[in-house]
Length: 112
Image 1: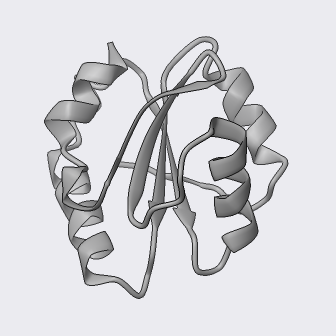
Image 2 (image 1 turned 90 degrees about the vertical axis):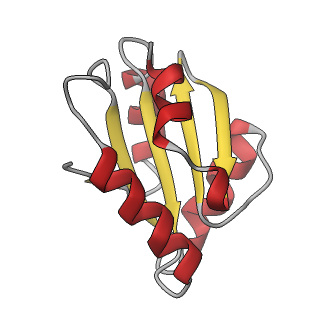
Image 3 (image 1 turned 30 degrees about the vertical axis):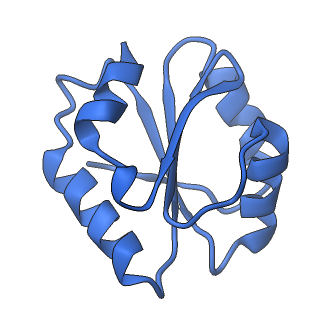
């Protein structure tokens, strides 16, 4: 799995634009949290590019980029959680999950 790192606020506009042609996965990850590390590991082990409908995966280190994490919460109208996975389609968050609710099978349903 190859993550696109989310490191600048301006990337949110590009994410919205990209989401008009394919799903975008945003994973907000805390490098200080064991639950977050577990969620990341499970997702990376399960990821199968052939199944993901050309989904574009973005990774946010929310410890390093709290401003972007807050901007995501505001822009997509979701309460901040960590870890948190969001699926963006056509500029809208159509699904989000946090902690151990981040399940590849559930995300996969949203990629269709």
